[in-house]
Image (cartoon, rainbow, N blue to C red; front, side, top):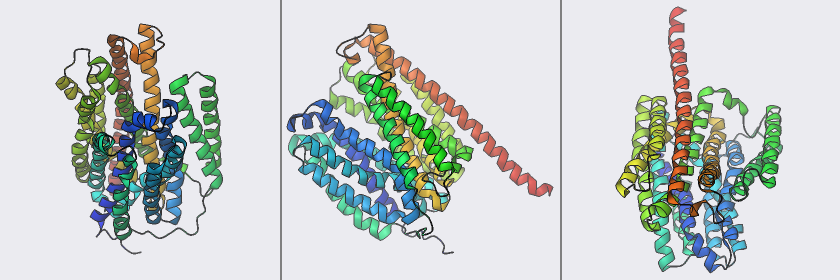
Length: 481
């Protein structure tokens, strides 16, 4: 068997970081352009929000299927194809003159984005030796932070000077630069010609995730107890059971459910999902707190919130390097512990909080995510065999996107219910409630999130202790024999 070639590992990191930067930049830069799109395309908010939703929903339902397909036919060719599709989709989005065409081409763009998001971590795992994966994933996390930070600022400059079309055209030079780098540097792993794609499982997975995501999306406007939401969530549960039943009986499933027999793998996926639920929920609510309660303008609010990705971007590479040297488990526990304390501390925000007090409360969340994320991702990828890296990489990506979607819908619904309960139903929505009631709802939400993450911390500690016990047994057993 030929030894892996790691001579181009830094070129691999550059190619993958380009893909991650594009995906995160596109999400953050498009969000800030929605009011402009509503005006320039002569449409309403209900229609223009699908410019974001169509992108997110498409990526989420495709991630796992793409991961499985990549394990069969090779990751490099699909990743390069993802860059091509994303770049072409960006061009067509910028040329759109109607919101319907823009939404359609955003779906095309998302198909390309799903290749980039699903396969990036797997290609990093193949491009770097195991003892350096944590550092590589940490540096890749820095690209995520740069995309998040750059998006709103660059978007504002583009909208003010070039027009909304350039929100999408800006992706084209990055894509054209990344494609030749990827072709030259990404590792090419032999195909598994004896495997077949599970089309029935893929269809069931697509329908299952579609019901869940549409249910979460609709519930934000109509409530979780509305008829459409109940129908979609019921369909999701039934389809999920059918999917699991089907996958257990197929020799080559889309998702190998035996992966979840590994307790450490399951704990890493669950805790990763919980951290994204919490971060997405707070990132969704904090702008309302800064603008409606503290009366900061959008530009200042964005600047204050940027401390989160900045802290994550600085801490992530350091945490990744430490995980390569000392192992992942202890660092993930420390990261979860910092996050837990940070959310409890965030419940101290008030109507009199100063900007520097907010920064001191908010920046530890970025530090905690940076400490946790790189070692956790490295642990998940290290638990996979070479022929399952694509699926595991897809699971890693879907835990993020599902966590973000669920966090916005569920945390937003809880906050709204709390505000309505304390202030009474408001025809103009929860954001029109007096500041004190909005802050009270935020307090309770932060306490709930802190409690959930504390349970995740306990779960991770239990897994760590079991891991240490198992390791000691393996060391002692040969000595006894």
